[in-house]
Amino acid sequence: MADVNRGNRPLSPHLQVYKLPLAAVTSILTRITGHALVAGILLIVWWLVGAVSGPRAFAAADWVVRSWLGFLILTGSAWALWYHALAGIRHLFYDAGIGLGIEESRKSSMAIIVGSVVLTLISLILFFIL
Amino acid sequence: MRYITPRKAAAGLGAAHSGTQHHWAMTVSACALILLTPAFLMVIGTAIGLPRDALVGYFGRPYPGLVTALFVIVGMIHFIKGTRIMIEDYLQGTARKGAIIISIIFGWGVIAAAVFALAKMAFINIAI
Image (tube, rainbow over all chains, first blue to last red; front, side, top):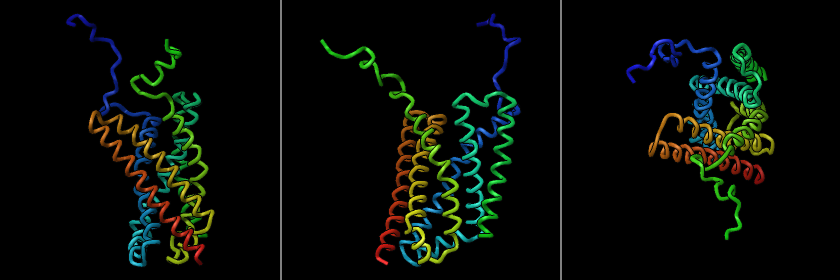
C-alpha cells in the first residue's frame, strides 16, 4: 500500500466543498418534494374523514384547511406536486436515455423550476377567480 | 430427474430476490399520476371552502369521488415504493426493515381512511 500513487487521481466530490450542478440539486429536490407531499395529503384526508365524522371534527379540520397555516401547507403542496410531476416526467425521459447530457440536463432543470412556479401561480389564480 | 430448466432453478435467487418490477411499478404509477394530478388539483380547489353538507354532496358525486380515490390510492402506493428507495439508501439491517414496514402500514392506513370517507359520502348521496 505504501507505494500506491496518491498523486494525480480524480477525487470523489466532497459534499461540503463540492458545488452541486443544477441537475443534481433539482434531482435531490425531486425526492424531497415527493416525501414532503405527505403533509398535504394527510391534511386533505384528515379533512375528508372529518367531513363524515361529525360537525365538530369537520369544523376543526376545515378551520385548519382554511387558516393561513393550511394555505401555506396546501400552496406548498401544490408547488411540490407540480415540481415532482415535472421532475418525474423528466425522469421518464432519463429512463429512455433522453436528455442525459450536461447542457440538456441543465436546461431541463431550469424548465422544471420555472414550470413548477408558473403552474403553481396558475393553480392559485384559478382557485381564487373560479 | 427434475423437469426444470437451469434458468427456472436460478430465477429469484439473486441478492435482490426480484427483477425490475419495482422500477416498472414506479413508471406505471408515475404515468397514472401525471393524468390524475391536474384533475385532483381542480377537484380539491373546487371543494375547499364548501360547507359540510355541500362538501359531502360534492365528493359523493362519481367524478370528484373517483378522481380523489384514485389519486390517494395510486399516490400512496407510489409513495410507499418511493420511500422504500430512500430507506434503502440511508438505513441498514433491522432499522431498514422496520422503516419499510412502518412506511407500508402508514401508506395503506391513509388509503383506507380516504376510501372510507369517500365511500361514506357516496352512500350518504344515495340516501339523499
